[in-house]
Length: 117
Image (tube, rainbow, N blue to C red; front, side, top):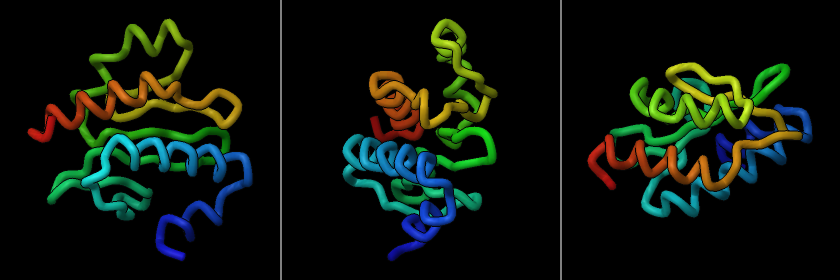
């Protein structure tokens, strides 16, 4: 096992499955990235820049593009879709995960911002 597998093993089963699926989607979106633990959460880094991170908490999970400038660009859509968010991340649950199309666009925006898009 690696650090991310160890991290996921500490979570309730539904969160672990949900975040494993997110991990696989992000791996597919960022094939050149390195999986790391950063800021005490699993994430994906290209070079020295964190591109995406995710975590499980007591009542929800979160996705974090490691930039305060990305999520605000999606605020209107997040509100329409009923997701809670801050300038640094989006909250979701295993019963209502972050949709693949939205995840893809957030990751693409972060890649562009980081100079990799």
